[in-house]
Length: 324
Image (cartoon, rainbow, N blue to C red):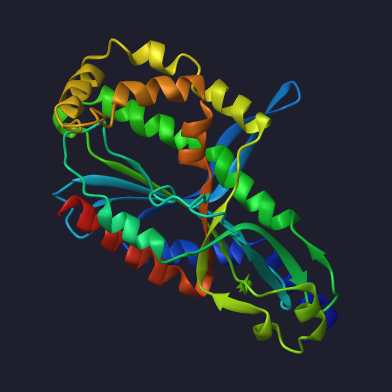
């Protein structure tokens, strides 16, 4: 292979377009309709600039029956192609007692209270509990020795800043359609890469790193993991712009009032709590820290070689949740 051939192939791969295509085929083979470059606006300084996430897959449960629609699924995917020799490493969480940033049910965004269809989320919790969990990661280039996390963080932020648009649309659609057409909605953001993923062992230390001769001595290879990304003041402002007047615009909506009464009937007999759609709309408009952490902090990072398995397990958990 001559130098010019190697150059254009390398640059084409680095564009992530070939990785996007392979990922799109996996989504399509599962029965999803796939679109490229999901666009959204993000403010930079005084300007609204257009950004995009590489892929969005849209499907309806059950996937194999076009005449039945019991839930809607959107899978948002950002692709990051890495050159040979680049691997991603993640730190395991060091939890203090029972305090942890890990919360089951936050990686799969389940928007279920704007519908009268019953959903049992236990299968979704079980699906998420299988993942390793990390709060920080970086990339190591084993050819050059470079270590940096720019591309990893960029991929997560692309997903994070797009998510409020999907959430707003999912809720608005259910409040605008006929009651019988309102169905549970699930949003699943994934960062897909061809890089190998490693989680550092809990006994990792500087001394162990200095003495190790093989990476497997200090880290375990994983097919995918949950990555925690906390919110920033900039994201909070971004969120407020998208959900400005959201509750005010819908608080007299007949469907919202109906769903509120329906959910209230299922309140806990002792504590009186229930999944309130009105409260959720108000919290989204106010952009409270709690709701931002619930919907925009947990992301799945997956090796493309394992994406098919991940998504099959995901759809199995959603199917069980709907047809429990």
